[in-house]
Amino acid sequence: MVPESRVVADLLLADADANDWRQAIEVDNVLAKRSASTAITKARLIRARLKTLPPSLWNVIRDGSKPAATHAVLAGAVNYSLVFGDFLDLVVRDLYRRFEPVLKPQHWDAYVEDCHARDPAMPTWTPATQESLRTRVFGMMTDAGYLTGGRRHTLTPLRIAPEVTSALKEAGATYALRCILVGSPEERP
Image (tube, rainbow, N blue to C red; front, side):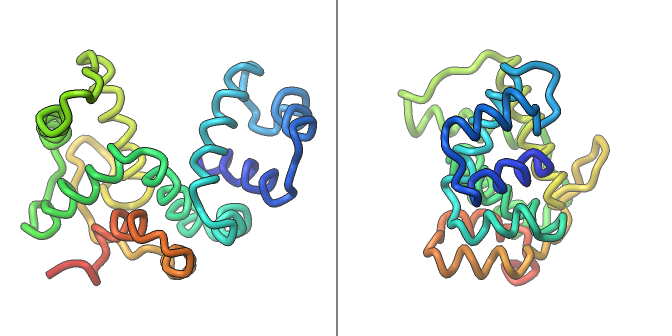
């Protein structure tokens, strides 16, 4: 959701109040969604993700190159969803370290099982929900550049935009930084 995140970042940088948000999202339909309810839902999710980031990254999201904006949005998704962040940090990092060439659906499924074993209070998802989440996670990873497109999901080295790593370091956002650097050549053994 990088294009939509650019719009939301602009509203955050403008310090838009509730009326400005309503006007932009519901009336002006700046996210170009088919219904106001969809626009509101997407705007809330994106704003929640971006609010986990230092404001310096809002500028990168709004004005930066597509790769830089994508990496910054990814950092927000990692901060917002620890399930996603931990998947990158624990599972994907291990695959890179072992030079495994492909991320398989079974990796996600085993990870979710391990999460339940570690935390029995974690909600149990239906198979359809688990598959939907896996599809979204793999999609975000493909958009960011960790995976090649297509059905095989081949892992590729990924160099995170320097302005994103710098902003995360300056903000002390070590968790997001550690998670998004999993495919970086600097992280490989």
